[in-house]
Length: 358
Image (cartoon, rainbow, N blue to C red):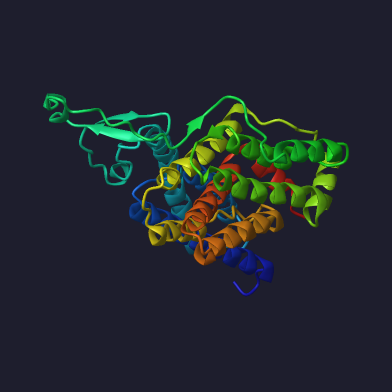
């Protein structure tokens, strides 16, 4: 083995360290999902993409020149285990997506093969979920009982309301830079901005609920187009990749689900109910701990900028004097982390981040 070139050993160590990192990520994913009581399908899909590339990288290592047979056997076993997990994750993602439409479904039972009790749910437009049990259907209302009207937390409409002028401002900026910069990533965040403005509510907190995350999104978009390293990377990308200034159906769907979950998390605030702020901040911290960095092939500097925005939102959640704003910033943290996982789960944004890496 002493005759083997040193770079073989260094490369092998890098791959094994990546496996350790991936293993830690999967363990954190499973434990945090168990604590939260739900599984984020976008996070599952981004993990699947990273796992796929890691498995291929490990397969290459099994045929490296100078690797002893015993090491090849171990690497082959690792590849086999990765393939097994890789085949399981898409099934988990499908169940998680079904659960986001039907929140009463027990996702984590999929992991241990157990069955959850059958339940029927009715989800309202505002995100309220009513659970109907067999006993409920037999209840007879009392004579003279008046029906209580539930306060609507929010509703979604088809056309966005650019009440702060941020959509028009961002759209004009993207159009201005599109002649020299590739704009798919900025367009991704523009669509997030639009989706945030497609919700309505009579709550006095609704202005902050829309404006606070919207200004974070505008900051991200502007940074991509005008600041280092994004501006240069997008200009270089334009030389090697055809312009893409639209999102496909899958990309749009992921954004819609992320924003929908953001508003669902703020339902208590919008209804002016008591909300456990500490619990909300803990959820945000858990989401931040599971932030998606992707595999070794991706450009990390742009991802780091998103991570910094998540961290700043989390700090605002911890330090804001107003309890409502604490909850809003906690949900912003969770939404940004979910959007990052969504981006890594989609082929086009992931390809772009890979092309950008030197």
